[in-house]
Picture 1 (cartoon, rainbow, N blue to C red):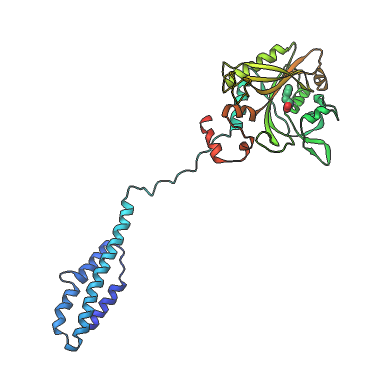
Picture 2: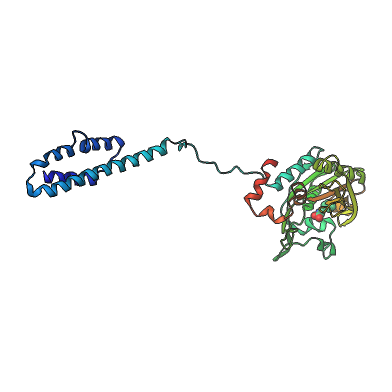
Length: 340
Ligand code: PHE
């Protein structure tokens, strides 16, 4: 009897169950009305006197351990069952990675393209690594001319003829060389300038330049085309202002301002109380440039303009640090989801 009790105690200590049902049959087997413990207690009076003490203590231990075990296993199964019966559905797919958004620069670039497409401008593209002719010489910047200083340029050390284009006017030279007027084209693209990176300058940015060449193109056509653009981009109430300026490849040249998008021209700290914001450069294509590109300047005339996409995006989205556009900061980029 004593050895049977010891055996059961060991069995109890080592008992493991795979289900609640197994715990229950273990309980019935040991602690039930007709269980082993009942039988052993009944045997107590038949046990030899000298074994009674030890037998009694084993039985008490067995009872205690068996009850403990049953409670512990039941609790374990119940808590794991609680988990699987809770409202969480573990078969659902995990959260998808956040859906991306378009970058503000292409959003604005596409908007500019759409506006000019509607009045018949086509898109032209060209290389970002340019030669001196297309980036400068054909555009009336002779070698050594101080006008070249207007655009801090990245040159390739081994070959001074090669540069990273400083504007997409180089694409317009290529278009003029390869086609006959009428020409209506816009050249979107990335350009490079050797500037120290700050909130207001970067070593690369994006432009959309435009070119219109035909017979009898006048400054009035230039003005009206750019007014149309400004009103499509910034709203029907927008006013424009043209200020005389200088570019080697246009004559006359102008800088175009739009009425301030924040205060509508009344004056605020964004427009520095002038009521206007500068957005692009423009002018009538210099006859030398037409001739350089094989277009007869006695027959044809035209206008050109060029704008920075970052600048337009800055005004549309109120971004006042250029560096944000290329820092890949998700919190910044997520703000443009609704602008798609
Ligand atoms: N190419 C000029 C620039 O990058 C912009 C411009 C284009 C000005 C066409 C006038 C006419 O600064």
